[in-house]
Image (cartoon, rainbow over all chains, first blue to last red; front, side, top):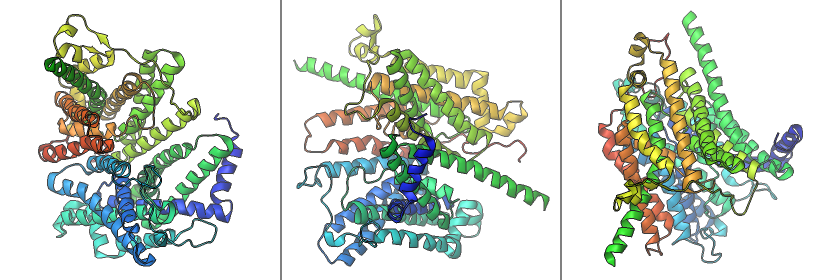
Length: 316
Length: 314
């Protein structure tokens, strides 16, 4: 249909994403930002804070961390400060739709979506204007200090420290959601805000805390891209990782532990589709189609599980 | 001399507002019908993009612009049906399904466009719609050339607003739409099929979003680029809130947004060269967010918005 044998095409896709150890590291590098955005969305959606703004929060995190990383200082201090700055920037951006919802009843979906455009254009204005790299003349930011580049874990690959941090962040988020008071408040607020209020939970404050947490996680996705992959900020630093985070979170059924395999799956699809595109000429945008289809298919699958549970409950 | 200059400025400026407002008006009306029936359609951004691509492709392959418009409308309606299938028939989360539809449609649009046209350094373009002057009316000073020397699709948008208001407030079907959006159980008791009415409203909404997409690639830009919609769908969702789910107010909101957008375009062009143009592109979005902060407190959304209807449930 699209000018290439299906088996051959999928063969290329599979071998380029999971075929050898290098391919696996590339897929993991690709998965890291989606683990972070997936966690950001999963936690937000648990509280029914509809944060569709992970893309903008990621970009804000990237800009802030790049800004910090360009200041000369000892390497590990720089990395720590980059992470803090990126997380803070993401959290700050996420606070906007949450505050608008709590104070002005503005729909958080719409405001977080619109904010994505604002942040994107702000980033573009920065790298086209005052922040433009005078050395190259391209619309990209100046690079961060070499000492601030995240250490590569396996020689000859791009597997960087940020990937490990992402893999650790998932169980931490799981612990936070399922084993701590804040996690309990987040879940109750999402499942039944009336009951939460009745039980003495300050729903508004929970929403704001969720936003800070969610935004910080999305911001860290941007930190990893700057510190471990690109070492500077450019217009296409994120090929929609923020939106992919929504797919990842839904595939994971909003469970932080499920976010890791879901993100690796999408990353494998992306790296595979790019390789397939190079080998067979099928446009790499196929991975976007697969993402959308996977999300919709997962939703339908969830529906059937919901029905199953409901029937058991009715008969008991 | 300055009077002449002023007039050119005003005519051009007014015409720009009308042109920017047209796709927004279609999209906003489409989203409004969907939401009045109780279905938030976050697929709008993707539906506009896919329709814009499909319409452009059909027009460029067949040479007929109106065939392109038809294809765009049909694709929009089909994607509306897809969204309705998930949210109305299956009762799934409207937020997440909408995002899913947008991701699916955008991916499909990029993918098919690359497949059909390949990677070209200069994007292929078509000979788009030409302005059609309406006799007599276009002779009115200032207003004439700005409003009545426009594309046919612009006139269609101008007609669509009162038509939408008539359909929504003065026809039995419009009453059904409002009922299933406000109180589906009462509508069901009164013999109105909630599922069918919601399906129809979301499909009509999708068709209108398709028209918006068609305008972008066949009248405004005459080419398809990956950024051709660039957030207009999201803006339309905000405009529905801003327009309080009413056709007239929604159209007014579209005009207001278009005014701000035309203003920032003019600011870009007006010698503020040392400021990167992207800084101005932010302004309409910031304006929309601020406007929503002012408007949302008193906004009353359709009561059953976001709530799936299952007959057997109480």
